[in-house]
Image 1 (cartoon, rainbow, N blue to C red):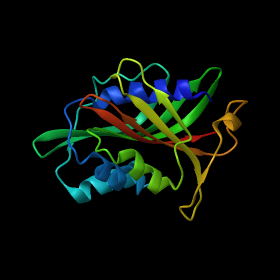
Image 2 (image 1 turned 180 degrees about the vertical axis):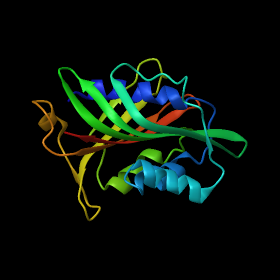
Image 3 (image 1 turned 30 degrees about the vertical axis):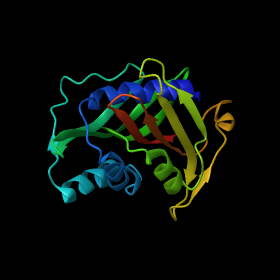
Image 4 (image 1 turned 90 degrees about the vertical axis):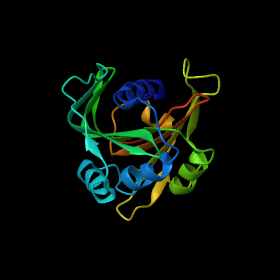
Length: 194
């Protein structure tokens, strides 16, 4: 498990949801992805409850070669005159010689200055790591929060070095916030399963 590989996975998936975005991104991400633990059916139900979401034809959407989402949905809506897009789905990803099952709930949007702090408050810990993202603006960073989520909703941060030596033994949750000097950024909730 290398952070660079997961960054490539999520940046690739994010291409499905690219576009002009709204300032309401974090509250939507929290309601649709975080509060539902990123589960596809729960995330879709949260969008249905909020209303205004439209399904997008994904037949021509391309995923990066190392991500195989077998069951995914892309939806958009307009907020304050700008589009928001969410991808929710499940599948697998190749990690070198290994593979892992993944559940993804990802939103593209304009981040308010408190998005990282809001994510930190939700997780209950600082980012596990922060990585610069080349080509996404002078101040683009990917803030990665890694933890194990308990059945009671508790979140226990983990050291990514503990994942680099071999296959996963239990599910790991990653929440990522991408901040950028440009107009778009990514928020993602991803569960990686052995």
